[in-house]
Length: 356
Image (cartoon, rainbow, N blue to C red):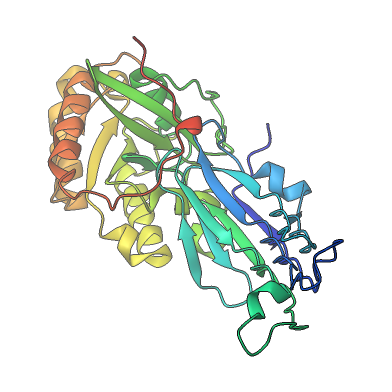
């Protein structure tokens, strides 16, 4: 399936039905009185966070979404029926923005979360609403209110606890395949990852976290070079960034320190908030470095790169050091999960029941 993380849609809630002017006319009922009913409410447009979706591709080819209008009021005290609602299923992590003003209207952050993105118009009043002691035969009625109409921009930012960051061929895909259930494409050429991959890392019973792998960054990415800048938005919701370093590049002339500094510079240019996130250094491909040289090369790298945070030495291919990395990440994420989210309405139809 094609990965699409941005789309534009037009939505229209249903208009309310008009009120009715009617009088009761029956044999032997000389003064029947007004009996015109109200119009029905127009249909609402809802958005629901569906955990089974991971792309906005459906909205790329289906742009217009309209709810039904309410039925008009009728005689004999009959109110019009409400218009049918429309429910749009969107991936968890979708941001809904007003396309004209750029204002962020809603965010879908929890599976099953339901929000109303366009309100249907209320129905108009029939003449039975206007009867009184001094107005016994009213002929007034009101039209239905129009439903809301909006032009929206949908933007998907995947929800993950940990984001992998690094140059092409640094071993990000190999690492996410080694520690999680993700199975990304792995090859010995740059830019094998063309869209974000998510993987669930199982630490223990009921203990897990989500890792996101995005296409590799290159120098100049913030100005449009390469693919990584298109997907950096998916790292903005992560709690932790893992900066993966290719510690044994094929070309001996390539300096890992220079590459690492280039990545940090691109982060800072793209988004200061992303640059300020906790960022751990992961020195990968240590299995390709002779054992007697490892300690000296690691110390030299840290000294020249001047990294102040945690540093991990691993080999994603052989899984050396991966277990320690996983457990440390989980403890860090668990410590950060202190803030409780605001209560939202969760639709049980879109939440998977735990196995018995």
